[in-house]
Length: 106
Image (cartoon, rainbow, N blue to C red; front, side):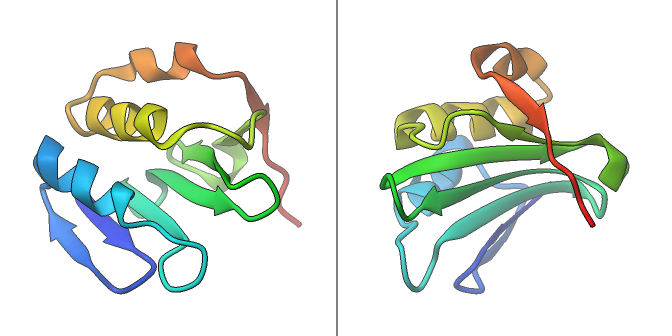
């Protein structure tokens, strides 16, 4: 498991507290997104939605054809942190906490 931030921070096998601290450090300009990678094609991503000042959550499972984005772009950071922490330990129940749409790639 690898936590990567837009600002170049890279944490291998992050602890729950490292996940919390990293996501709380997201900002609009220097650090707008974070990825928690299981592999190249399997990951969770959070980004700041500049228009709502909330967050968007995405995940992908094994291929670009299985890429999903939350319907809500105003997710509070606490919900993002919990989802990342659950994902890191293999708890997939975070999927039921959000409404999802398939993300199209062209």
